[in-house]
Length: 143
Image (cartoon, rainbow, N blue to C red):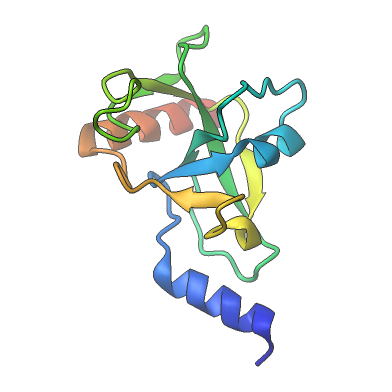
């Protein structure tokens, strides 16, 4: 077993990247995926929300992720999520907003890296009511 296989097996075993899990995604990755992404000075990452419905099958597989924003995007299909940032930070009590408009495929190989995709230790998963709202939004998007 080579090192990439070992890395995949370890990440797949250790990480829950299923729908509803919250992440911190380095702005470098968002910049690569989103045309016109605005990278704020002093900010290294933006929140991400997994909408993955299946397990990945290799390091170069992708996990569909929604980007979080501090401003509510226009439109009806927006999920508001509170307490994403660490307690005591200036953003802890401010909601993050996720829209199903543009999920981005992030490579599984970027998970677990400090300059990639890191677990959100403050809030690793949506609350049940937020998860219900996400499911509603995803159903509307598919219809």
